[in-house]
Image 1: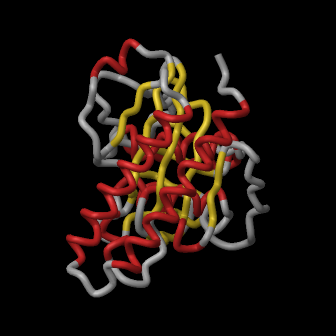
Image 2: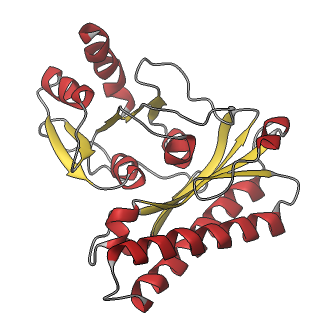
Image 3: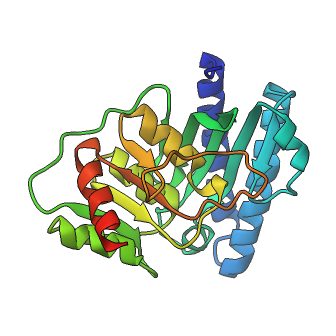
Length: 250
């Protein structure tokens, strides 16, 4: 069953509301130790998101990075998968904008609606209205990676496509950089959970981008073990070449 129009609206509204709350946390705790800023952001955003979803969709389950995993969610068709604060480290560093809020809805294991808020730049990208991906600008293929631990897989893709690596913070910020046309490929390996990529995948797929595992298999959600360690989001015209580069290296 596809997501209803109200599901797309709810994802965007909840992600935006949590983002506004987080901006307030940042203002109120300016000058506090970074770990305290991050902990408060995680806690307060989680509480707000869970409350808003319970009010608007009381029959749905919720899987949140910051909440206790209630495995009764496996019995539900509709499960909201959320990361209340994606990029806690970036959030806790004054002036950084590459952090996000993720809110996604999976129905029968398939992500159907979602939103990624980028509060520090005043933007929420959602599955509806569908984002319009800009035309690719001339120049080397840009592969976005973590600023601290770029994966080998991203380097393999960049080398195969004569591309370049671009460093950025949180998973949501990197994925939305592809949607916004700032980069062309986001390849992640080495560890993520469902909440790290459900909302980014929902937005990317709605925008017509490619979003799969690194071996090209579909992304599946609401599993007993939410570990989902790798991800490829890219412009569709680059998907075959990116997957081919990874396949050749195996």
